[in-house]
Image (cartoon, rainbow, N blue to C red):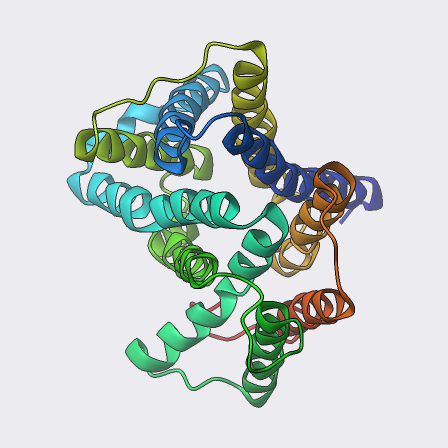
Length: 304
């Protein structure tokens, strides 16, 4: 592959994952403005507006986003991807940010690949490799160190943060596995899958909870909302999808480490998050463990 194209792909995915990490900082800033701004409200409108805008982008790029409705099976798969995949990835992540901070929320979500390994072992009878077992132990040891600050008889983060963080990590698994076959066949562009998944997920959340809170009408709220929509949704999803034209999935997975790094650095610089030695050690263990399972040779089955 042309080195310039590979460099372009790397720049795209690094920018995308960094922007995803930064979006958690804007969310935390929103939650700090007013208690009426909730994770549910933010997730509803991020998903709906993000989905609509990405459908428009897809149409402008020459795709046929409405073609999914010609195939009922594809429609249901994308619907399941949105509701079972994107809802926990988005809503549970923002809940973890609201209850804690963007750094711990992103680190917890980062262990999602290990839930994929567990699913493959239980439901597809693909036993994990030795390296995957070792990395899983290392990753969850890192989470345990972060959660306790190294004091094993004391929780340094609330159970709510851990609960929502792990739900978001499970969402990473469902978000990856549900549309896998559809994306592998290429019959539906990945941009269309993401766009409709976002929109379906947002509509379902709005139908479940249509009551809307009284949001303060101040510039900082709308600036943060626009930043989450543009910097945290539209730009990174587009860059991530496009980058896969130039780099392989393994390289993409390795660059995903920039998401927790950017969230942690931003939390320290903007919100003055204090990191103990245990926090730093635990974060390093999680990031190294997840990167290690991605630089190993690919599985022969769908688990890639």
